[in-house]
Amino acid sequence: MTILWLVFLLQAARAGKITKEENWKLKERCSKSAVAANMYKRYRVDQSKYPFVFALSEIDDVDGSHSEPFCSGVLISSRHILTAAHCLVMNDEEACKQRSQGQLHLQETPAQEVGVFQSSCSTKECWTKKQVYEVALVRIHQNYDVDEACDNRTTHDIGMIELKQDISDFKPICMPQEHDIIPQRLISIGYGEHSKDYSIQAVVYESVEEGPEMNSLLAYTKRRNESTIHGDSGGPLLQIRAGKYYLVGITSTSTEPPAEEFEGLFVDVRKKLDWICDETGVCPLTDSEERKQPPSEEEESF
Image (cartoon, rainbow, N blue to C red; front, side, top):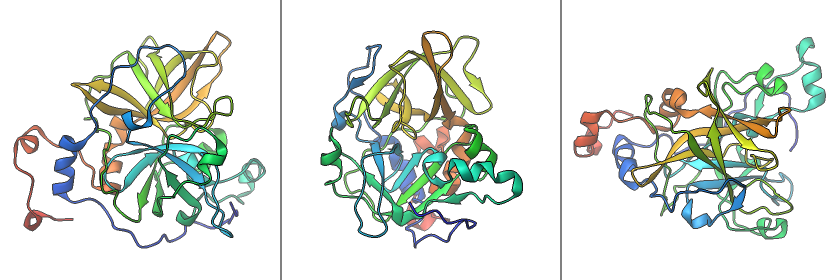
């Protein structure tokens, strides 16, 4: 990508947030789960069983070609995808070294340089031939700053992609409520490259003892060589509840402690619901709202 040292660029025209009626219907439409995962290793999964997981690719601004996946994302409405903020900003190691001199401005990647895909491809050659969903706009959390970007800190590592057109037969992931209880075992899904295999894969995580929550993060462990890897960033950490997939976190990064386990770090989506609602219109429903009929267009206030 061409690096431009400017403050955030104006983005292309956008369809905007979903309506209250669309938001109400998401709860009924969100994806039903397949058989619960019980394998303690990284394993390939059927893409059709996780229709809300997408791959992100770089688009060449000269010839329009695109690469294999560099990050993952999760569909939450007909046109909105959540991912990691670090997948949507342009900065490099040399630029980060200069930040003390005030020379680095954090910039969102221009929408035309991000491609969104969904495929069961397993090779780089296959990915580069796939059709791209065009992106209208990218947003990163307002508190994700230069220090977080350069220090690989993850507190606000969440971003949003808005597509130019709605996905017609979409199946989003179900969204959590602020006070949902998180189980010990969760599943991470992503398009990370594993031994030259770019297919969608899953990892089962176990929660860290003494409570996983810290500063809007969730910390979960997995055995060595079987954790999240490059390309998984931005993908969903999910739980299965009442026969459906519910979003819990967004994959941010992983650490490698001395022990025979990795620690995966995920942004806690429950603590970002207000931001998601403001940006997309995908908002939590109260118990009374869930029992009501969907609002009519006349009731819309967006």
